[in-house]
Structure formats: structure tokens, C-alpha cells
Length: 359
Image (cartoon, rainbow, N blue to C red; front, side, top):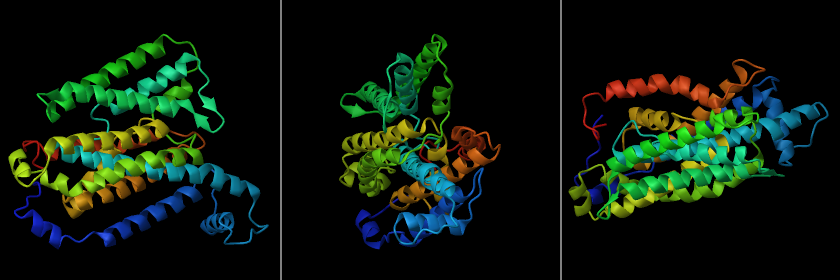
């Protein structure tokens, strides 16, 4: 797939129409996936009952005695919080994945490219093994620690990549891979030298929403809104950056400023998502490629639609994780890896022999 080229940036702006119809379709698909995710599980709840319970919670319907209290608890306190969190995490990973792919001009890039996930897992491991109580009511120190670890990892990679005042993206990529490997090694050493039960930590490292609460969705929203707002605001400039550097500069693009803003914004969104969901791979790889195959490479369309596809994909992956071998629940990271690994090979073979930015 060839990169989008623009001969007249002003004409492009004037002729572009925001893809409201595609976004509407995406929202409808997410809604259907969410309803399925809430209704299906170890206890099946009819779709009509799901809507009645939701309407009663919103004071739009008088509660019926035919609806069992257990269904209220299952829907409102267990399934709906994890579906909403899966939606937010999937959208975050999809948008940040598309951002990294455009920024690095590399179709194989995803949100875990520059050490964010490994740094986050190291931060969580340190807190978990320190013996410090990390749960205080509705507040958990574990996601905060993972967030700090992810930010520190990408900051170190960014410092390494700066040469003569310029951010070299290839160096940033390699630095991120090295820091990620180092953080993973330290995590393994800490786990081997510890005595406590590591099952909760291992479950978190493999990714999932088994402990999802409404508070998690509320806490992730500010980071997501800030990061995604900056990313979408730079979508047109990201299109221009697919050209050679001197062409982009001739169109008035401050390349270094744009690099810094997009790297920080995508990392903020990714780290926030990882801190509440654990390590879930391939979402940021799969979602952007599906949109490219369907609707092309314009990042003003690609970014929001990648978020919608990522959200729908992760809702369905979470549903599969808790129903395939019910009553045992699999980590969501296993499901995304089973789907994402062959998809990664497909993308790798498809781009074989092409230039780095020739996708």
C-alpha cells in the first residue's frame, strides 16, 4: 500500500469531508458488541432484560419484580464495567498504534514499541513485591506505579534518541526495544527472587479486565481525553509527515515539535491503558491495518476509526476470554496474541521487500 501524497495541502483541506457515516457505523458496531458482551457469560441474560436493567438504573423504567437481583449485580457491577473499560483501552491502543505507525512510517509499529509496556510491568512488579499495601478502598497503587514505569521508560528512550537537538526515530525505536528488554529482565529477576503468590501479578502481566471497576474507567478518561485530543489535532500534520522531511518542512510543518507532541501523547494514552488492563498486545497493530485496507491512509479518518475498531475488537476478545473455557477465564492477552500473531506475519509478508514508509 503506497503512502498518501498531496500536491496541494490547501486543496486537500478544502475537499476533505469528515467521515461521520463511517464513525456512525463504527459506533453501532461497538454498541452491538457491548450488548453481546453484557448479555453473554457463564450466566446468560436475555438482551431485553439487559436493556430493562440499564433503563431502570437510568430511571427510565420502573424496575420489574421479574428481574432477579442477581442479574442487576452481574450486569451493573461485573460485566458492564469491564465492557466499558475494554472499550476505552481498545480505543486508546488503536489510536496510539495508528499514531506510532504514522510517526515511525513503519506498518509493524504498535504502542509497545518504545518500552512503554515493559516499563509499566516493571513498575507494577516493584510495588507488588515491595509488600506495601497497594489497595486503599477504590484506589489502587498498582496502576499508578505501572503508569510511572511506562512514562519513565519512554522518557529514557527519548533522551537517548536526541542527537544534535533532533529526535531520530530509528534511534528511538532501537532504544525503546533495548529498554524494554532490560525492564523485562529486571522484572523476571525480581519475580524469581520473591516468595509471595505471584498469580495476581502474572494475571495482570498477561492482560485482562477481571478486576475492572467503574472507578477504573473514570480514572482513565482524563488521560485518554488529553492524549487523544492532541493526536487528532495533529492528524492533518501527520498526513504531511508521510512525505520526505524537506517537503513537510516546506509546507510549514515543525517536524521536531510534532514528533515530541505525538510521542508524548501516544505514550500517555498507552501508559494509562496499560496501567488498568495489563499487557494486551496486537490491538494497536490490527486496528489501523483493518482501516487501511477498507478506507485508505488519510490519518484524519484512520485515527478515529482505528479507535473504534480497537474498542470493538477488545470487547469481543474479552468476551472470548471469559467464555471459551468457562468457568475458567483466560487472560485477554492470550486471545489477542492468538489473533494478532498470524496477523503480524501477514503484515510482515505483505510489506516484505517494500521500503519502510511504503505502506
